[in-house]
Length: 477
Image 1 (cartoon, rainbow, N blue to C red):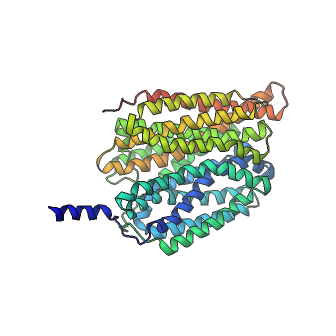
Image 2: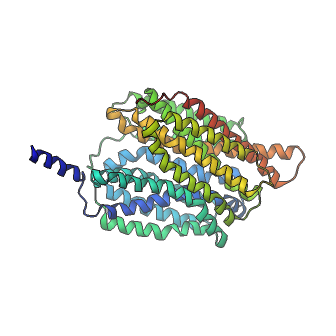
Image 3: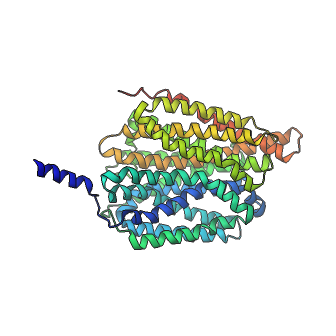
């Protein structure tokens, strides 16, 4: 009996895949993941400067955000099949080289088109690295160290977006926007060296059949949907190009959905949406991501173009809210274990409403402390609802379909984030045009009025999230 117990204890102490130095093996992915998540938020603060230097409109510049997230979402969709065709080491080394190439292209871009191309190349790398960070950590750390390892990965995911605007603001205060991308390169080179020296393959390469039609349908469907919403910023929602793109996107996605539901081995197992708990949890996560992305897209531009605050100070203004986001994200997960998802989700969306409403009532003369407070309140509410909703949704899945839940959430929240950013951009333009149509000719005032339209969209998302959170049942004791 003692020998059996001792054997079980020894198994519990061993990782699924033995690696001499697990932390060193993870280091390349952690650095690459940090740069990827940093890249997702850091560029928002540079958008006003980029518009001026590249001579493009708000509707055009937003593609640097939506295009990046669209590519990340599509690659996340394909990450599972990619890791079955190539070794972990091959995927990570390719992703880091890809990120370096994308950063160099963006840093040396002569115009907007090349800059967008570089950003989308970077999106490929982020989409490959993010899911593998969690997968590799689960495999190479023993069970008794797994909590600390996953906490470390989670900290990278939370901390990078929190400090992104602040660090980017400091860089822009002393140098060109190009240095945001040049600074990625040395960190990515260090990550590549760690990966070369310490990372080994942790998954079996089975090379299953690839459904290329599903890949094409997902790319065309999501791409057309984001394109249609983005074009509305310039051409209006009634234009033929916008309506055509949206119709094509919805039709292709309907075909893609039908195909996934009727295949034996779908790329994305959408049958998970047939389970009410997952459907509610996933919807709340996507709404929450839309709240965060729309607000974080508008806020730095409002501070610079509405309050006329220098870019370096803009980053500092956004720092308290970013740190609060990271802190609440870390705490909210534990709340689920104690009280379930119902209370944190409902309270989180109510707090988000307050923060969004405060931002919607700003002006060209709003006090800096008021903007900081509104941002902090929003960054308390959104992450408070996010983690419990995500856990509630994933815990609703059992059996083989459970493995698909995380992939569905990660993919769709990037797509929804891109769409929310595009909608916020469209509303920003509508608000500016309405202000000018009344005979006013004040650029800062027009931008603030447009930002109000966008922040009311954030407020509306929070209302929808709260109503949906009412359907979460009380936690069983």
